[in-house]
Image (cartoon, rainbow, N blue to C red; front, side, top):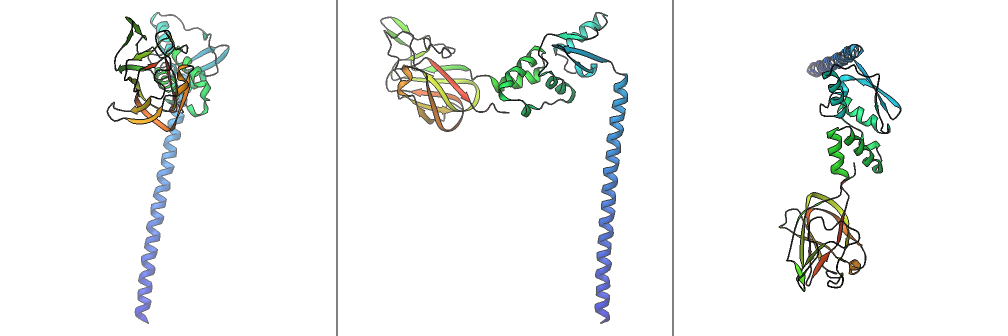
Length: 293
């Protein structure tokens, strides 16, 4: 019928209009993309032209030559490179043909790329090479890389501790009872608590870990039994208020450094050890799992 034909024509006009609008939007989007590409290309060309007139400085790193723009090498104003170049200019001395640094060139590309682009591809670096990169960043005083890697590779440090109280035998204080007393593998220094023993450690920041290495105090075995604390409960916390039991001190920890593996990863700033009797710790190492990049 005529009414059906008119209805179909109306629907067709509506569809054609939608198609036209869609085409216009696509054309507009294509135009925008094209304009953006042209703009980026113009910026690249402009930067390249500018770079040709900029001073290029050569660096001899352990026999390998690296060339870069002065503006790149001086981007980090507090870095060794920027300070060195500034010293030459302030003294009105001509820059040498190349600056020689008796350092390994292996990781210098990473430092140079960071100065160029403000980022570094840590994923491409093997875990056992992070310390090498850290040492190079420290030497050249590139603080962003140095500080980032320091927080990734450093061992957790005991910032402070609390305990039940000193243990004194025949007038002799047992244990050194200092926050840095738990680092020696000989276990001849440490923290010793009278009973019932309670030693609470606060670390310099929150860490994630799945095991610890722990040893008893063996500094004065004539007056202190190294096994004091075997079987003590181990607690973790992030605020020193809410504590969770995560394990126990092994029975052999008085004879040798023993590993305690937890059932799940622990995220904590505090560790607490509680014993019904005396408690002494001569060595402690927290094995981080949050230092992966």
